[in-house]
Length: 124
Image 1 (cartoon, one colour):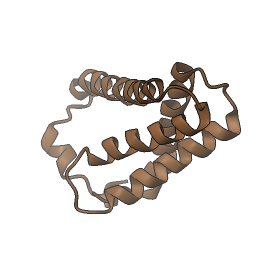
Image 2 (image 1 turned 30 degrees about the horizontal axis):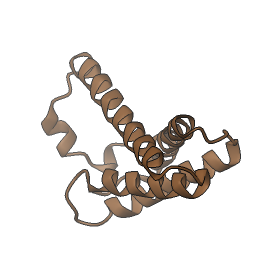
Image 3 (image 1 turned 90 degrees about the vertical axis):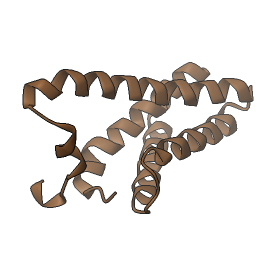
Image 4 (image 1 turned 90 degrees about the horizontal axis):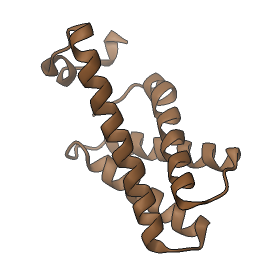
């Protein structure tokens, strides 16, 4: 799925940064803005590149969860289980939040699922 670059910048980087921040908090890693922004941006770029390939939807989320797990394991130098749990819970929190927001906003903007599946970059 081809995602416009503007969407990557305005949605992807803040989303990646939020996931990284939550994972750092869960893992007990000290919050350092430059590390969080770097990792969040790297996760976003990886997601963007993975979405360019014809792979099943959602596979990019699994890959990002794994990448976040690797980064947390390296940075925390602690329990691998905690790093896995932090990456899993961070991605799960994002999925729950996006589902809740979409469910609340869908009736407001009269969005139907078919509209989302026929997204074109020309409409941005």
